[in-house]
Amino acid sequence: MRFLPQLFANNRSWAASHVAQDPNFFGRLCAIQKPDYLWIGCADSRVPANEIVGLAPGSLFVHRNVGNLVRADDPNCLAVVQYAVEQLKVSHIIVTGHYHCGGVQAAMGPPMTDPLEGWITPVRHLHREHEAQLAALPEGEARIDRLCELNVLAQVRVLSELPLVREAWARGQSLAIHGWIYDLRDGLLRDLEVTVDA
Ligand SMILES: [Zn+2]
Image (cartoon, rainbow, N blue to C red):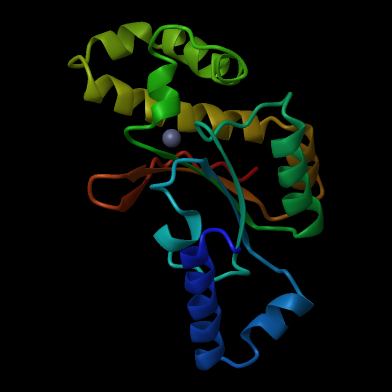
């Protein structure tokens, strides 16, 4: 018995539609991976990286986790960044947060159990750090959304301070780090205009 038959059916028609448009589509992808972008986003099912920016397979190297966090103590994320920068030589790292983020919201609420609680600890710290600014906003959505933005800025900062990123810049490698936010309400991305490129 095959489980989840609908997903396999979807997959067959997806593959067939690519081949119909370009018979060598998968052959070419197989031969080389040369994406120009690393996307670091939230695991949220409503924020599918490739779809949002209209990029086909092969164009976007992707890392996603709860709250789109970059932590210097997370070997998973660091390995992705290292591979993207040193092997794939991407020119852009894009940290994309999103409004209504459950991970960010959780960091404003009561403690949870580990490992989730430990994972979002940096966002709790960020919340405390910006408590006065957030308290000046209307309670609820506005505060969560502002913390979602601040969270993106924090990840851009962490990335720009990573030794492997500093070394890439020192080598003269072209590498820009961007901070974007996605709005679930209208499907649009906004550039937070915090791009760092050296
Ligand atoms: Zn999220």
